[in-house]
Image (tube, rainbow, N blue to C red; front, side):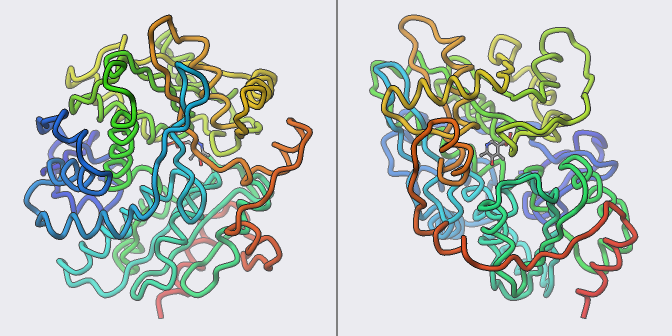
Length: 429
Ligand SMILES: *Cc1c(COP(=O)(O)O)cnc(C)c1O
């Protein structure tokens, strides 16, 4: 499969090259210009790993063999994505049963597999992953590459702006996982990472790669669980499915739209944001006007300049989706809490990100439709908030209990590219 740079159409690369390069020239994103056609009904009959391998094979093409892709998927997807029924017409797709209890485990782990393949094919001995995280990417990427020979991981995160437990999931690992607490917000962290990629000498010297949601392998991996969601919906409701996605960088939403383009029966998608509502405003008035990022309860979505949006624009430009396929809804802080309490009344304990998607879904869902909202993180990852809002204690799952008492190994840094560059060069030994 050839992938084309969304900004520089003359830059066309293979899947593994796109995985290795990450971001294209002039900060363009790699994206397909053509889409395979799939036998959806047959695919929906298959188990998760088998089906996912087939979907990814169709997207990636013959660059990797069917056996290789199957092996990569079975290494990466070692946990389920169950659809939990909340009411008769609403269910939550729980994507938090992986090692770091968030959906980013799917993309992070598949990307690690893809990068290992790219390294092998290209005889590269060492890769440095540099990524910014608003919370969950860091943990997923750190775990996916932990103690992987030939890979150093450097993670930038906004100091004090992610939940303490979330932070512990990736700052306590050590070994090849290096974490930097930056005195900045997430957008500034992301801007620093972009500066790294603009420094061609540095990128070449350290063989630097990004693992944030712009990497095409993460996006492709995320398409698979939309198929898994639909496969769990009773057949007589499959033509009435509406899916709401709690959105920050819009990778998850883009993956859902791709699934729809590939023929998966999704009536429409809903992008649900918190107060950082650049996309809902844009969808209404056509003005792209990011505001300063504000901190919210759903901190993994505190993004005002979502970096996957050009891919949604690409799908529109390709004529593969139209305006009616997507709604964009902002849910404020008050409604986030109301939504969590409403879910708790229904017997479903959730956390702020998923609760935003539930709220947006409820505002949109019509009679006869079947709504799915994405559960992007385990509620215990946001223990303090969830307990405050719901007024009842929740237990920590074993993964979190184990790291809660360990010391953070991260170093502090100001949002300064020169400092970051120096730090990266110390890894080149
Ligand atoms: C990353 C994240 C999101 C946002 O996903 P995007 O693909 O960046 O839009 C939502 N919820 C949680 C819990 C996350 O970690």
